[in-house]
Length: 332
Ligand code: SIN
Image (cartoon, rainbow, N blue to C red):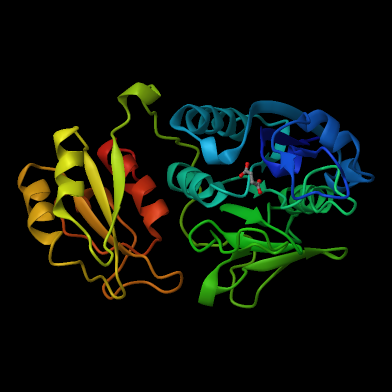
């Protein structure tokens, strides 16, 4: 059977249009359909190694990303992972919350029998030199890449964010508001590159897969978005006030991630309020607000950490996603 690459469009700058192509900084995200974007890229079917299917899953600026679109994405990935006609999945997404969606999907899907590759752009589709077409073609190449034995090369959720760089969902982070190469994985670096010669994984990455964990097709079943728990990020900063935590508790927040200073430290004014949260059964996890590195003792959460004073090896935005999934009983 000839297999295809499935492209799921969710909007973003990659589908954006500027009023004046000479001033691409002024544009509206999420204007062009994924079908129109893909159809305009020369050689994209060849990059897919066969055929393509483009489906519009959402059409939003990713600053407005929500649990409803995440659930739809999870269901679409689940369906495609079980479909023998699909060899790999590409998701187009805005840059602003791409790292959160990548981490959500990675957390729900685990190690994959087929690649799931997210991509994006910093310039709208009608800029004089748009970056989206190359990024999308690179993502399709990555999703179609095979080992010498014919197995999918990538078996975790990854992202192509510019310059052919391939980043893991765990470390990827938007690091600049308008630079063309806006993403970084900090001191971890890119895990590989896509170029005219195909996909090259960095030395030390496992060929035929980025981890040794067992691939699985069991996607957690999540309830409707209305039933997802409310988890907020509270930042420890100069002049922090306990009243911010108390206000969230009074409104029924169900989980808190503290974006701590430096190596996991929290302003003394916040500490009694966070202790009150814990005593009310609201889990409180810590994650550093530093843009690189992980706090001492930081690790990836597991379900049993719900009651723990956990130091998380993720940025606060991804730690929030993990805590939400832990409260849903869906953390893999
Ligand atoms: C968005 O995140 O949807 C808009 C910004 C971007 O894609 O660069």
